[in-house]
Image (cartoon, rainbow, N blue to C red; front, side):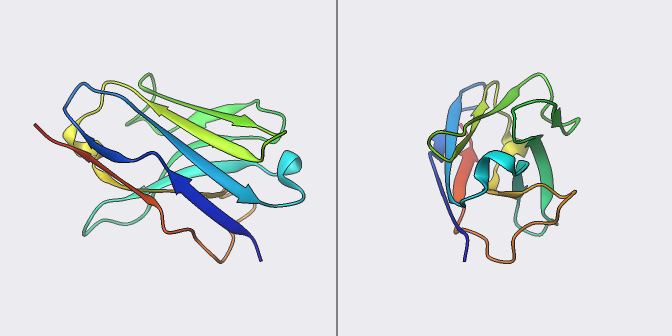
Length: 118
């Protein structure tokens, strides 16, 4: 069973930055496109960013393009999300999982809470 462990969330002021990390226990990690998703209270889960196994191409939702950067380290089975110029509407629980094109794994990690507030 795949295990996904997200970390790095916290409370930050508008305009601030955070870097999220995701550790994936997946033997085929380097061949697996991975994504970051987020879910705010009362909202559906939203796709934030996707990165292919080799690292390119990369895609972002319109709401985060230009502010967030997704990256990965295949040697460490890690995926990262650098978030800059944070806004209150970025407040959500952030999860990593397999990209939608392949379908997320059934088991989700606990996620990491990001709260943007003054």
